[in-house]
Length: 205
Image (cartoon, rainbow, N blue to C red; front, side, top):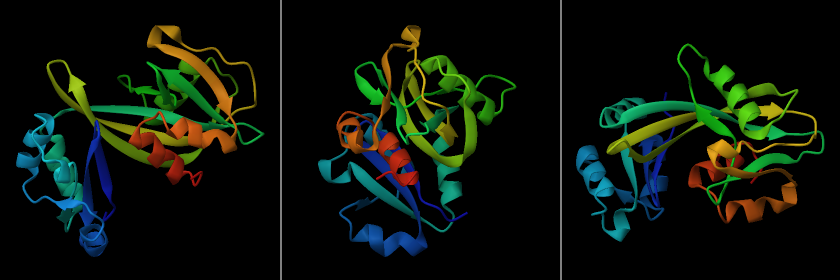
């Protein structure tokens, strides 16, 4: 499937793009990187020049390049939800000082849909939650157990009636709230690039 894959790490990103998108990326200020392993090594050791912090890799089969990158990491799957209520407000949270959306790791013998529902319910204390549709998947790299992990998060459009919420404090969640659409700019000033992509994918931005 010739889609674009975006992998984020801190303030850097690697975009794996099909040949049909080559010219658009070539003229966008992104650095074209052809050696995947060399790029990853420099990225994780913080040895990339500033001009290479956002790079793209042209691929006839982007999925194969993604699999190649995955082989260098501990691979973790997670799932979460973009939850809206009847007033079109978005369920948001603050975790470790950053604006966030509810999500968490998949457990053994659990489908990604089950994970998404369970994690949103646990992290936000929410009830009467249902999945509307699959939204998208995001990827990011982060330090993990003296190495690095590549996490794939499956995101779902969800709905639930407006209700009182309860943050799961043992997961370092300090606030959970319904955010009006006109406050999304405030959310984006202190969140992660993957979540901005989720908002854009849901056509909220």
